[in-house]
Image (cartoon, rainbow, N blue to C red; front, side, top):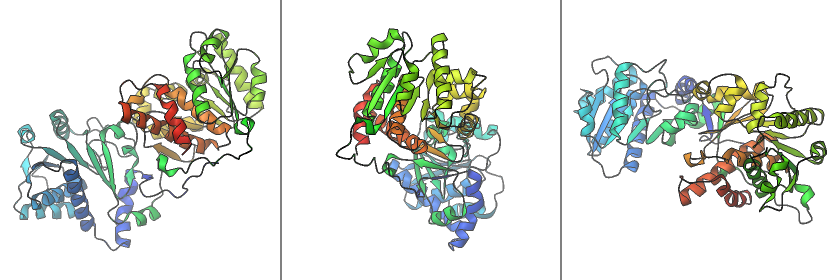
Length: 499
């Protein structure tokens, strides 16, 4: 059985932006720390990360608005000046009044001899790094034009950017761009990690994510309820050693269903991934035309094209969908499997074309022990919304998929989300090289193998998604992202699952 750390650390807990704003002051008060002191710590932390990113540069451009982030920006500028850097500070609205601790930080900058200038693109020509303190998590609605112009100019400059708390223009809860958003190289976020920094466009925009709890994180986490948890393979302690006297029947009998005529590759990838993930026996039910291609080169797979109900009775868990297609053969297979699993519940992973058939099946009845693994296109069909809708709020739609189909949902993509209708988990691993044919099929095979070996479906999803994505990172780091094949993951998956 898999062991997992059941007490998430501060760096694993994820929060809505309004939770951080709401409880930050109370946590600071309980810790005996003034908010201005937090702002000073934040600014100094940003400068430290800037130095780590680019240790030998001298020319800083700090961009501020008027909100809380601007205060952090003024302190960052002060810290850089004290370290002997050349600092230019530009405000989008330099004449606009600031209040509270932001005004206090602004005054400290002016009293040190600093100037506040209006932004112009020429300022970018003189800079070596940009500190983004334009907009924070409090933004409502689309980015205003005066900020949009600055954001566009910064992105076009290709200068390295360090964003404070969140890249300007990004929604802290969804990770969606609010019209225009900064593309940062590093984002230094404070007190609690915001949901929107971990998935979709947010994962892209924030670059390297650095977390600093400013000394109040433990108190804050005691007050605020975490909405989701970030997953890292290092948080899992691995599968328990197998008994010396075990045999193949002890480690699950997995039935993989798919591989329509002319589409043998996907189910072959899923079934071999299942073998490499430790399933004791793997049987493939496929179209008769695909049997030879599926079994060729992998004799450990049992491949059949008839006797589906007998195979379902044999199996302890099921994967359906890779290469299934949507023709009459596929529909008949899908209906048979759904009816059988409703009458004889067993863990089932529903992927690929099986999801497309689910989306148009008006007589669909939820299965009791089901995992669904849609990408955003499949999720859009399952929920009858656009792909843009899905990507605009991935947490929301992962939850809707889980609820609509009474399943644990794995919404694949940058920052894959797992949702069991009550809680969400987000995978930290993965890279753009994995956006290639067959990667989802490998994942479905891994998940099927884990539930076949007795893991609870939620734990199987958390571990399986992390395992799959981490394997992709290891292979990409070794050989590069371009040209990464789904089958390249097999050896690394085997190594990781045995650690």
